[in-house]
Length: 473
Ligand code: NAP
Image (tube, rainbow, N blue to C red; front, side):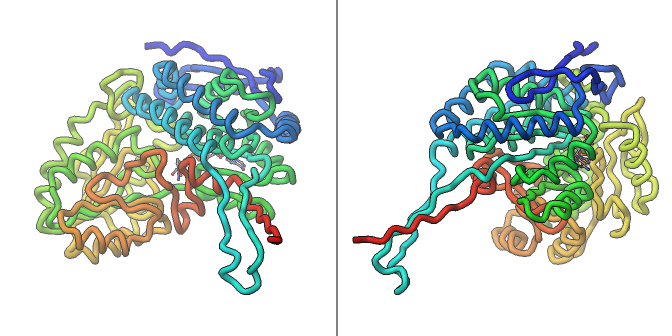
């Protein structure tokens, strides 16, 4: 099916503007141009910051912010199909997964609306200290200021929602720089916010050269918080360059799954088959490294491989496709290289089907292989037999990443042991570690980041606590 061409201008200060230059958006599957977007540079980014600053001079009350957020959620509900197709066209995400993402964005806005109505400061028990006796104190949460949001290609709608919606809930105006490969869904979201009644300047979108736009966002003192989702190299670099700003990072992972000897092996294999290859593994919590206690290993592999081989590889626009393309040729070449240089045995996949990488399972790779310790971000998982739960935990922890991990076990002791010992921001039991529901606190430790998203947690980050102390009569 040939995708319709989508053309979008930039939203700056409530105006949809053209700049005379365009960024082409190409389907990662066919290479066809599926859209084009007006190209911004440093000048437009400064204009966007001016607009955001102006907008915040007239604060929007919480009830108005909540109403707008609810209206965006409703619009996303009505325009699910359009949103899913846009995601699929620009990211090459199979429709099955694109529909889930579009639905989740609705949930993200709904939870942000709840935050807008309920988020508040707290009472401080002043007479708990001698010095505080005779005083009353409470905190209020003030918007931190202008937020710069930078988002990745892999969830072009919902990860933008995870920045725009909490920022509005918190009362902050935003300058958004979406990934150049996938700006269309982000601009749709901005359009929906505007249609929902958001006044000019509260959301501004600039698409264009990352370093040029990034430099303005880093250097401009009006930006108080940079919320970044993407790769570690870029994210930690931004943080180093902006020591006076809050820089919140949601980065990558090399997601481990432990299958204990007492696990429901069939459940574990089914979940891994579903969650290691969805969107060709291009989720930061795609199941990647599976450690199986030796007594369960053969059964696990025997169930897993036919499920993997049954996945349908093909065009993302087809409703029954499970695995589509990776984002570009460089990514494909890197992933194939990592497969070929692994010292493990390729059980299935490892080659192209047409232009697409077949879902690949590698058995018992060396711990120092790239597929064992780095983020593959492709349709690849490893399966490794281990002698004990302790060994599995040690191997799972043996990377620089720490976003989410999972364990399959029927024993409470094992589940609790793993929850205590796995050095990750989240530990998921008897479900793939790819699981995310949008109200959860989501984020990593170690190289995976330094914050938590989910509207409740993001709103905290996007506000400053102000203390008010009153002398009692
Ligand atoms: P990326 O290459 O780091 O790009 C992310 C964003 O940063 C894009 O908008 C990119 O713009 C921008 N960027 C690049 N260089 C910049 C600079 N010098 N200054 C300012 N912005 C700059 O990441 P990606 O390939 O899109 O995404 C994949 C990565 O994101 C993976 O590592 C994945 O694990 C991670 N991720 C993490 C989470 C999470 O929640 N923890 C969720 C999803 C993805 P251009 O597109 O214009 O280059």
